[in-house]
Amino acid sequence: MTQQWGTPGQQPGQGGQWPAQQSWNRPAQTWGTPQYGPPGQYPSAGTPQPQYPQQYQTPPAPFGQPSYGPPGGFRPAPQGPRRKSPLGGVILGLVLVVGIAFFAISLMHYLGSTDVASPGGTQTTGPTPQNTGPVPDPDPSPPEIPQPKTYEQAQQWLTANPVYDESAPVPTDCSVPRIDMTTAPVGELTSHLNDLTACLWRVWSGPLKSAGYELPRPPVTVYTEPITTGCGKLDDVNAVYCAADQRIYYAKPLWKIFPADQRSLPFVVESVIAHEFGHTIQARTGILISSMAFEQKGTEAEGKIYSRRLEVQADCFAGMFTQAAGPSSGLSQANLANLRNVFYSLGDDVLSGESNIQGDHGLGRSRKAWFTTGQTNTLIGKCNTYTAPTTSVR
Image (cartoon, rainbow, N blue to C red; front, side, top):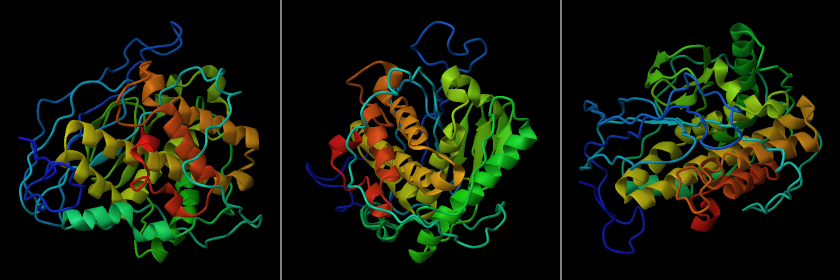
């Protein structure tokens, strides 16, 4: 039975008790073949198709010791009902996995398009790169992610999180070298993506520390076949931030889902990881768990709105990182514009071909707008999707 939001018109966080036992599962999703585009453009043979579990059962865990279930990911075309989990009084268990799948369509006809207006205003940044100091090694045993105790606290973390008052160091004095993601051996790609998290850490660690949060540096695992993680089994074409072990997983064959004309352009694979690192930021600031709590507390339609707010905020964080690391990494304005169009192509409507779809990641124009907001602002509060109008995360 799905618990609804109190009385009609009541807003999330107004009344209600934190559930005694909460399952945080989202439908297990895999990277499949996009259901559109020219024949033969995307891999089809052997590509895993979306599969949905009947029910995930998670044993209760003491508060502060979350347990996790099977992983989730982003499918090319949102479909099927969202599965709701039972709610009760104080949280005992946590299953939390956030992933995103980046599926490709031909973007040539988008490259000349005019950028849509950003939800936030543009800020002027200084030209001097900022060096944030030494970077820690990837942390295989990080401290637990913050958990709210009540819906009121969860609402506070979403809408007025202290991190929103901080600014990202733009530009940052770190350089991300070019790599050919189609030919790089697993070892070279693993080193590249772990070096990338060092640059991501340099951008985000200062703001999070100033806001009172820790930011362990997540390890990145590159794999070539299905792999079992703290979140369960991942398929051989996937990219996931797993909150169970606080690691990022990237499938080596992922490049195959991008159109040929996009594979050699700079920062495409890096933007995938930057989005996943955005979920790391959300996890470490309590935003991720709080958003998932409200996503599963309401109706299916309400849940999708929270899911979209979560995803486009990670898009915004990814855009802010490209602005920070772009100058030192040699990104041109044309490169940055291309990335905006890449995120447009990931919209629920673009992927599904349904202009009025009510998806869980956001329309192309919304994803592009929030990514652009990150590219044109330094104040992290500009990425506060939880106080933005619902239409801006549609």
